[in-house]
Every structure is written in structure tokens, then in C-alpha cells.
Length: 202
Image (cartoon, rainbow, N blue to C red; front, side, top):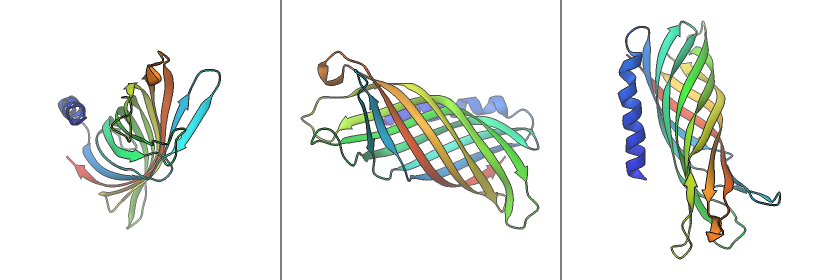
């Protein structure tokens, strides 16, 4: 798990110089709290399960390049710490979390305010790596393959540096050979996250 996170962070860090040639550059560091997260499984014979999770904490970093005054593009990575499902179809709960790496676009409107510097929309598209395991050492391992990640939301910058956001996202993957049955199952981790952070202008 830690090696995978380090690899993602390294990949983003290596891509930063490609954006730094011209235009405004900024780095955002963010801390998030999930307020409405769930894990869904789409099984055979149109059987569908959805399980709410406890409120997870996440950390993230983004690198943005200003194409123009009101539009920025960039790259980001987000690591959601594991949290347990509140219930499951079996007595044992699942611990689940995600690592997401994505390209981002941020259209922004500058505000003439002493407090709020700007308001902006958020668009994210990339790849997700869902982690999932039963909360029991005797239970079989769960092998989840990577899938599509996308997110959207709204945010504001306060005093040119403090960030507050609301982001809705979906991380998708495939659970292979579920319970040694040979059946592959589509899984989806959806999240509504409140982010707070700091913007470092470069």
C-alpha cells in the first residue's frame, strides 16, 4: 500500500516541470473528510449491493498551471485512508480506501472581496486504485483492479491562500474472483468530501 502511494506521488512530482515553463503555477495541499461515502458491488443476475462507510480522512496534493486568468489545468493525487463499512451481507465488515491520480481543470471567477479571492468549479478525470479487505484475518483476500476515477465540485479561495471545497467523486474497479468463484464484480467507491487546504503560489 505504502509503495503504491509513493509511486503515485513520485509520478506527479516528476510531471511538475513540464508545466512550469510559463504561466502561473501553484501547489495545493489538502485535507479532506468524507461525509457521505459508500461502497457498491454490481453482482451477477442484476444483484446490487451498496454499503455506507464510516467517515474517512483523505490527503491530497495538486499542481496547477494557469492557462489564462480564469482557467487552470493540472495534475493531482488523493489518498483516502481506510474506513470500514457500516454493515455488510456477511458478519465481517470490509475496510476500504482509495488512491486516485487525475488530470484536473479549474475554471475560476475572481471576486472583489476582502475575504473571498475567487470561486471555482472542479473537474477531475483519471485512474483509481481501490483497496478492500475483510476486517478479519481469516477471511479471503480481495483483489481489486484499477479503474476509472472522476470527480466534480465547487470551491473557494480565501485570502489568496486558504482553500475550501466540496467534491463529489466516483472511483471504479473490478473485484476479481470473488470468494474464489471465478466471478468478476464491478465495484464503485463514491464519496462526498469536504476539503480544506492551502495554496502555495510558485
